[in-house]
Length: 374
Image (cartoon, helix red, strand yellow):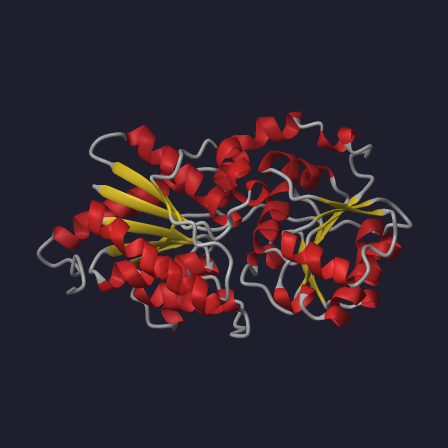
């Protein structure tokens, strides 16, 4: 069984690492290769994650770099097709909702190669988000939809996906968190930054709706700046976001500390010890839920509603007054949450089991078709 895993952006790395580890553990007859599209390509956004998570050197690095959504997707498609020609895998495994996810799915589907989508079925119901379009299209094309939470299967069924293509496997990103927990707990990043556990806030912002509109970004920076007068606010800054902040004249308060992007271990260690996280990240909503850290998500919707119903996450408008009111309320009375079902560190094992079971069912006389016609 030949498995080709595709990663493109930083959130993908934490999801693929446990799958590759499980494939290595099982050994023959499982063969696997890793393709990195290069959607995130600098050392802080990519290489350090490969090093810390024990990801093998990619068998192919497509080096597509940054571009518009259309250009980036097209570049991945053009560069990815020869990888399929050269190795002819039985499965292409894609994760998440970035442009590389959709691009690899399109190419594999057109060539009649099975696609498994890890983190399938998540929906924000906001088609103004590029990630939502990637999710919708990938799930329609993929053969096997591997869901992280029960509501994802409900979404897929509503879109006409039959049950035999859906498998509830849990959240594979939590596998990485569990695996790295000893290193996370040993991290001294908060001491190196002169911080006390529970005595600071952590912020991240990168979505275009928050950082590309100067008026919205000013509101969010103003809120973080005011909170920084009360306790330190640590803000590891995505390169795009940093450029937008500098265009507005920089951070509004010295207490708002802008850092370069951090490696996985140190970033999760800062998350674990924060009193509150303010973000627009999807993955951080999940990590804070598992860690039990209060989280405010500056978005009108989330594709991860389980973090609201079971976790510690709350949606807030991207306005200064809303952020301040919610943050001060949570700091005074932190919410209690619980870890969702199958967020247990064993999702990768269930993913590989689901791949194997799908193949066995496809080969049965009354099973679903193994492949589409090329």
